[in-house]
Amino acid sequence: MLFRQSLWALSSVSLPFSSALVVDKRQLPPGPLFLKAPQLDKRYQPAMDFDTDSCYNTPAMGPPPNNDLNTGLEPKDSNDSLTDDCRREEMLERANVYSRQRCNNGYCAIMYAYYFQKDQTGTAGPLHGHRHDWEHVVVWVRMADNFVSHVAVSAHKKYHIKKNDEIQWTPKEGGAATDGHPAIVYHKEGGSTHAMRFATGADFGNGGPENHWRKWIFGPLIGHFGWDSVDQRTRMYTEGGSDNAWGDASLAIADGPFGDNLGKAKPGEINFDVNNDDPQTNKISEVSDCEMFGGAPGCAN
Image: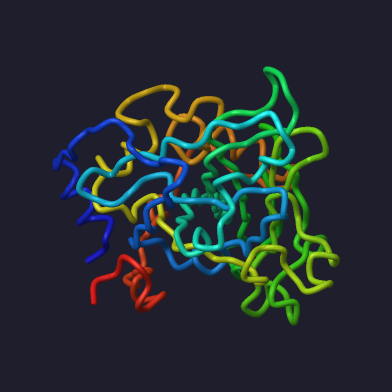
């Protein structure tokens, strides 16, 4: 039985609503949820690094039964505090990545969403940044041969788009044609706030990635139809119905902004309807991240 069917069967189950409780700045975020995502989403999940002036992504929502939303962190007016309380080694094993795909006209667009607790410039004044940050990567897959034609990364409400052969892949041998994943880096853009960028050859040299583990990071993935229930997913997308759940940040995989963001991330040469799904899209694999990441925190023994 497809997990999609069991998800809709659970859609009438209401989760208790509580105000967001996470995160006291001295505490670590909650551990990740281990749910489900389509095999296609897992296959092309970006390999992530985080420059030293940047936070690590964390779960946007805590575990049941409360499913508390992350309250984020208030930015400060100093370059010295760019990563205060948001870049500890333990966070690398305490993060989720969220995905949603849309497929039609021979292509699937897979959008990956990453939540960060704050985004700051390091300068004083009203433009020093904001609590919460969502950044996104979109992978465009030609379904006839599972070929990645383009990848797009979010930057300040826009997207930068590159062709397959213009980006770095990891492992580098064979690129996307083998088991490659697009290599993406979360970084600070000059005097502005943070954004995604495409990795360069320099990100593979001088000891490799800049995160504590010095390797490319893959967080446990949750697909759009991979939640325990529709209510659980809706709670994260909208904070119980709020139109401004994440302050100045925007979750692009939520129902309202999804199509618009795909339009911004779409290569001009692709014929694609950003607002409609093929009937067969978003099928969930039978392999959960607990099975895939065997023995990871939060998994039943």
